[in-house]
Length: 208
Image 1 (spheres, helix red, strand yellow):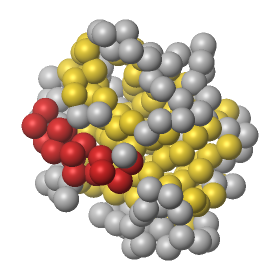
Image 2 (cartoon, helix red, strand yellow; image 1 turned 30 degrees about the horizontal axis):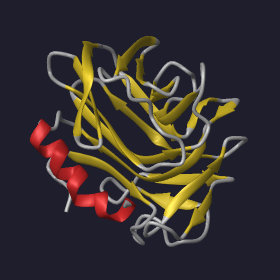
Image 3 (cartoon, helix red, strand yellow; image 1 turned 30 degrees about the vertical axis):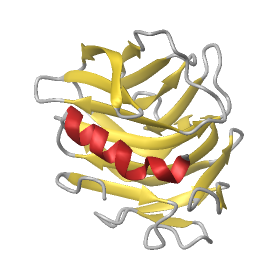
């Protein structure tokens, strides 16, 4: 099981309490935040995943504002990575807030209009058509750290401001990302590196 302490948002296509394999409603099983599938489809692989075609598909939900420390993670399988293209995991529709993969090799975090980019020190790009666990932590000193597949991503930076989220796989009102997403977890605290690795190991068998 994943870590539950501090978990405030849990939307998972494999959890029938979160999504019953049909319909346009997906529910966060922690806070009962009701999401709406907008052209997004369901595929019964990897115990259940959401499909996004990159044209008009996204999931909207009631706004979450993260003003202090947090952890955001998703299991994601992107298909449209490339130059100046962002595959977004969670974002605000105003294009002022986002978390996602940028230019195939960076993780982007944007809060209240301020951007930071975290680069993997080994130079390994994100692969398309491959499942990966992407996670961002902000601690109580506003330090941002990225993790991929349970391990530190390689660089860290600082970012203050409120991160406002209300959509999945949409990075503004007219731009969308393509690929598959299985789940999104949001915590109101900074998970430790040990807890991050625990969560990765708890679910990785589903995507192997």
